[in-house]
Image 1 (cartoon, one colour):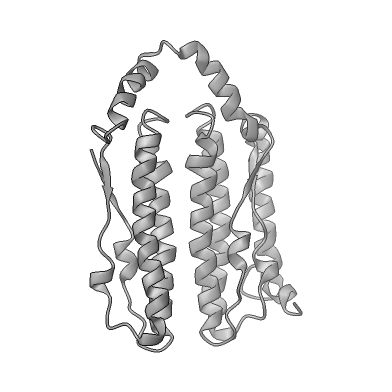
Image 2 (image 1 turned 90 degrees about the vertical axis):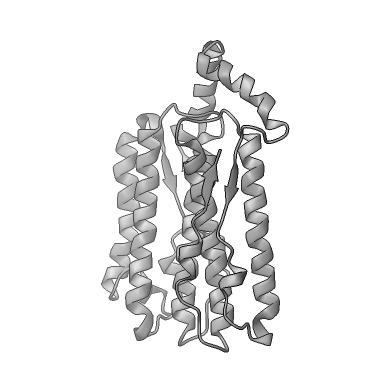
Amino acid sequence: MAACGLNGGAAAAQQPQQGGNNVDAGKAGNNGNAGNAGAISCPDVASQLPAIPASAQAEVDRNLALLNTQIAEANKRLVDTVGQGGANFVQNAIVGPLKDKRVATINRIATAIGRTAAKPVGLDALAACSVNGAAAAAPQAQQGGNNGNAANTGNAGNAANAGNAGGNNGVGTISCPDVASQLPAIPASAQAEVDRNLALLNTQIAEANKRLVDTVGQGGANFVQNAIVGPLKDKRVATINRIATAIGRTAAKPAGLDSLAACSFTK
């Protein structure tokens, strides 16, 4: 793409380069802490963008900066939560939620470009990140260490809670605001896409509730929020944004639907 050099990450041709370096700088900074924590690395988005219309440049820059912030925050969490959770803690509580945030942010970038130029496709493939170094193995190592804690009252209590998981008794449930009832008239050309995404919202809630049952007793006090409810909100933001975008192609784009993304956990 001829314009990739122009879009290296920030407002002008040189700033994009800085944007890309911010990602590396964030990783490098965290690598200093990574003796025990490792580091998260993500595909560069800026270099994969087409030419950015002037009208979209500010919004694209904001979201590219946000991608850098998200990586830095995830790497900080790696350091701050070393040893927490079980074998899948890093994936469930850090890497997975980071991907969901990146999907939503990347989608906003594509939407901004698509308002006055061809909307880039396939950028979602850049959302997934990986864990390098000690973090990839640390959870398993900690889990091994926790074998010595098998008699811990926390884990023993979890064994008792496993009995509640059978019928979802005591596990609680996640409930989310209804989106369909808040939509304006849907153009016929957008109906199929809107229906698909409304169905996806239901699927996301069902999957989150299933995870509540499957992960009873895992993680610490904030596990449900960090590993289930938070990531669910990020998924809903991306899905709701697709609904609004579909409607906005041939009618007024509904505003404020993001306020329906957050869900609540009731025990």
